[in-house]
Image 1 (tube, helix red, strand yellow):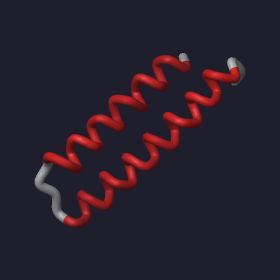
Image 2 (cartoon, rainbow, N blue to C red; image 1 turned 180 degrees about the vertical axis):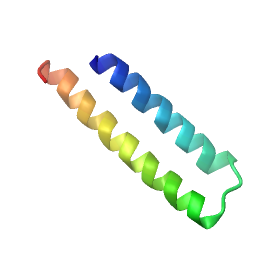
Image 3 (cartoon, rainbow, N blue to C red; image 1 turned 30 degrees about the vertical axis):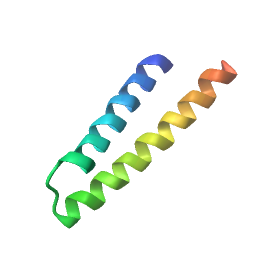
Length: 56
């Protein structure tokens, strides 16, 4: 379950980063994508910590 969560977070991080660096964004879309990237990275770090500790 944790591995699936990590994979989803990685996909979200890559998608947001690709959209930020490649996409043609308006200011609002850019702000939303930065926020989504921040949350995806935050959840990825939390999931990594949980995975390292081996407990939920």
